[in-house]
Image 1 (spheres, helix red, strand yellow):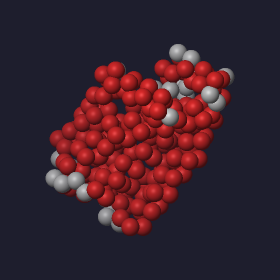
Image 2 (cartoon, rainbow, N blue to C red):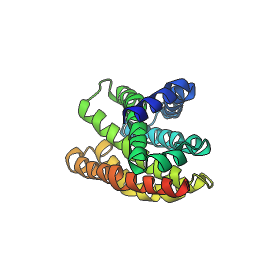
Image 3 (cartoon, rainbow, N blue to C red):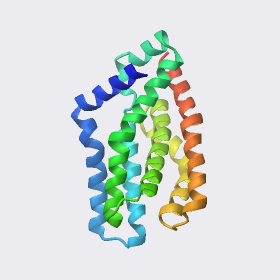
Length: 204
């Protein structure tokens, strides 16, 4: 696990676009919504759309480089599924600290001027769930057109979008939070495992 984490950490910081691209994309899209001066009730919707597009874009090439340079194939041949689990977990942890948390803090700051720990936690859960789903799309699209990503994954996120709306727009935190948490568990278990199996097939 340590070796996989250190590799992903080095790749993140050694490639400048990995640092500035997610925040830049989110910032540009969010500023557009701010300029439009939408109603206050749509502030969270604006940040969700900006986050949605950001996670979608950064997930497009999650595995492309490692597939092209033979790293994934080597991992499956030498280490098997356990090494790939550590590989996927390391990618998520890096994004959790250096992408999702900053995006959540920026979004909540501009919406209310203060950062609620509970809302930040929900925001990070929301972004992590999107990340797991879009990673599956990226794995499926590894040898195909990337547009397949959106076609297959976005319909699966419709219940998730309804839950997010219930928390951030309708203000119904308690019931929707537990359903959103369940969706996160589903994404981090079943979708995570499915991504692993798809990568195994794509690496043959």
